[in-house]
Image (cartoon, rainbow, N blue to C red; front, side):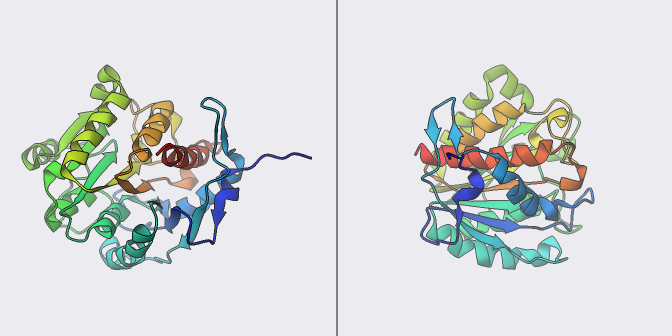
Length: 294
C-alpha cells in the first residue's frame, strides 16, 4: 500500500546532510512574557502533517535530508547568558552544512545566530521579516526586542541589514530614526503591498548580496497578519499574508548566499486550532523547497 512521505521523515541523524535543524528553545527575556521555548517541540509535532510534495510546482522533496541536531538545553538562561552557548553550538553546524535552520525560541536567538556565521560581523548580512525594528535600547539588558540594536552595538554595519514587513503603530519613532541613521534598508508593509512582497525581498537580497558574503535571515513569525497567526504575541492586524510569507521564504532560501535562517516568536500556548503550528511547519517545507531550487 502506498503512503505519503511527510517532512518529518526527512529528519535524520546523518551529519553529512546538506541541511541542519537546530532547536533553540529560548523563552526568557521577552518583552511580552510567553512560552516561545515550546516552539521547537511544537514544530516537530506538526511536521508529520506536511507532505514532501508540492503539487503547484510538481516539486518532490523526499530526496532531501535534514540533520536534526536536537534542542540546545538553555533552561532559564537569560538572553545575554545564552549568547555564548548558542553561538558555540551553531558555529560548527553552520560551517558543516549548506543551510542551517534554527528554530526558536524568541527573537534573542538571532544575535548569536548571526555571530555563528561570522564572529567579526564583517562579511555577514542580516535580512529580517518582522513587524518590528527590534531596535530597543540595550542599556536595560538584552531581550527579544533588541537583537538588531545589539548587533549594531557589536559592530555590525547598518548597511548590511535589511528589514521587511514593518507595520504602523508597533514601533517607536526613535527606532525608525536609529534605522535611518545606521543605514538600514527599511521596507514597510505598505511597500510590500504596493510593490509586491517578492519584488521587495528580491531587492533586499540583491542589496545584501553585493555587500556580504553570507546572509542570515530572521523570520519573526509575528510579521504575519494576526488573524492568520494567533500564536505570536507580537503579531498585529495588517501584517503580511501567510501566502506571501511562504513565497518569500522560498525565494529567500533559493539564494545560495543564505546560509542560516531562524523562525522566532512562535508561542504555542497562544495558538488556536494549530493554525500557527501548521504555519511554522509549512514554513519549514518552504525553506526546503527554496533550498532544492538552488
